[in-house]
Length: 344
Ligand code: TXA
Ligand code: MG
Image (tube, rainbow, N blue to C red; front, side):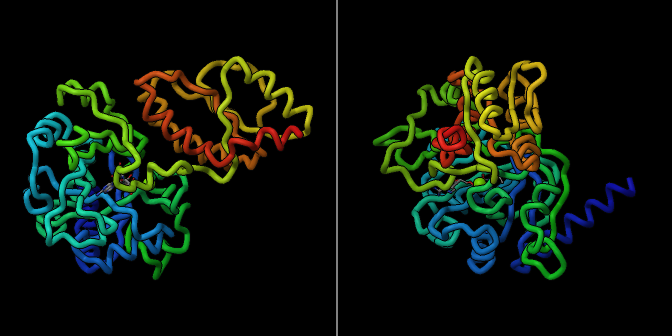
């Protein structure tokens, strides 16, 4: 009870800090967010500065379940209502046409706005206290640009040691335990329905098949005319150690070759591989939700082994693994040639 009251006070204090234009990191069910008042361009600029993110990348605006969407967006199509009824609060972001009074800063200058209603109780309490529940909190994942997203409060502090310290740009880091989902929200673009239908900009825990069940059509894959989304850059979500995806049946020989070349490696698998020479080895659940839940925390843990490379046992190329495969491919993108040079 007392603990509860204390947490309420911490959350309310954080809401006042947001209202004053400061940054607050907070838990959501997907990953931790780095929040600012969406209607305060100076506050939003502080997010870009802290993350080292280009300012033409739009950020998601987080709202309460009671929010009046017509304040944020114009033209709310029936597909939006259907998806909201099915999946909010939860790990789904909708891209809608932006209301004209919403600052450019949150949309990276585009005429759209990304809206999400998180289910995490701490996120909801923060949103309800902030501007009496009438505001929106702009929040990308609370990590440096291109790096692995945080799924615990400690990850956020590790990511921003200076900014979360005394006098740093991040006024508070709210602790809500480990994020349940573990990968970022599914993003559906509903701004180009007439020409493209609903477009799946970023796969996530809510699968394309689940969206199709509600929408009556399978969402399209993004094309080159799609709005720029930083999660859709090829390289993203990457630890400092190079990541290489290896098919299950090639793992044993790859590990042997690395060993013979005098190279060290860490291993992330979903199958049993007995005893290996890996500096660190983590085995994740062979099921997409459990795998997603552990993914980022385990990538961070393996990164800390400071091996020459992190080998990741490749996953099935099935629709149900789409969200996890998307993140793994981006984490591995910049190091696709690393194995060759390590073994040369
Ligand atoms: O689960 C999540 O979505 C987490 C938590 C904190 O809510 N947030 C998150 O934010 O992943 P971020 O900024 O790391 O990724 C947001 C993605 C980016 O790829 C961004 O470009 C895209 O959403 N996005 C936001 N607003 C958009 C818009 N108006 N049009 C197109 N893409 C947009
Ligand atoms: Mg991110």
